[in-house]
Image (cartoon, rainbow, N blue to C red; front, side):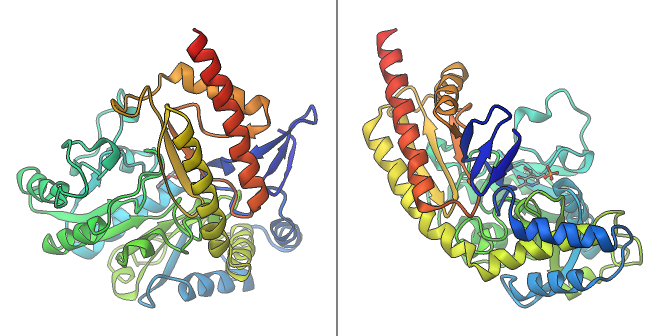
Length: 407
Ligand SMILES: Cc1ncc(COP(=O)(O)O)c(C=O)c1O
């Protein structure tokens, strides 16, 4: 790729592509946004290193606090990568509770560094052991393929009770935190049923543990609310964020309450800082990006365009036998590619890759190379572009169907 503008990318041969990926939720403002360009150009001419307080940093920290899910969440510490922020959140929870165990979920992804690798609920970690001790995993409510073969309409949130029992049997009684994605991104933009996140928060309380919502993908506007947890009417004790907050510049962070952030030793000078976290370039970038998201109400835009996109994708699911379970909140959407809707057996990877290529040749970059197709375009995508992307998917699916019924 050579350049981009909004939701469009241009390669070195001059071909253009509509971007339904956005660097997996990173490019919130899309590509080549003038506000980010100007902030970085101006800041790089003035001051580029050192953990100094700059005007941009003050504006950024105030904006994050002003737009937090609750006024108590007002203390921010910045980092440069997602895993780094989640690891710091774990250290903070340990410092606050004096305990050490962490519960996460099947399908979870919190990064690849040693402190979070064991919290990953997938085969990604195979071959990378040994893992850190004190990490416990329980099933996420992936209702399309419920691990208990139950249905959300009648299961009574059986998975919450199972998690409670899992903790009883596997924990040493020293749970510091439950870390959870309000909507699981890497697992396939999986949305938990109503009531689940609240019940998990209740479980954390029962155990004297903190609830950490990892909002790396769901944070700052993507889901049609500023924070993913707002869809589930809860406020976590700690939020981790990153990705779209810098729209390409590496910035991440955690947000918590004054009481929790004062925990010793996390709060001691230099105990929770990092070389780049609050650097002048990072804070200038995140200041510009979050300003545009808030001022231009991009979360409302994500809600509106996302709903139209979801409905258009649903019409594809109604039309094609291999497209199922369209789901989404705002511009965090997904659908399943399956052999058939009854068995729900995922389409083999080679066939998904075929669909990926069919889309790419028509000018759509989308994550259809695996059967849980995640759709997370830049928040600035226009309604017309979103519908054009669905039209390309329609053509690609049509051609795929013709080929697969012929073979
Ligand atoms: C929910 C979540 N947490 C943490 C991470 C890790 O972020 P990074 O790749 O910046 O370390 C990711 C990355 O995809 C993520 O989706």
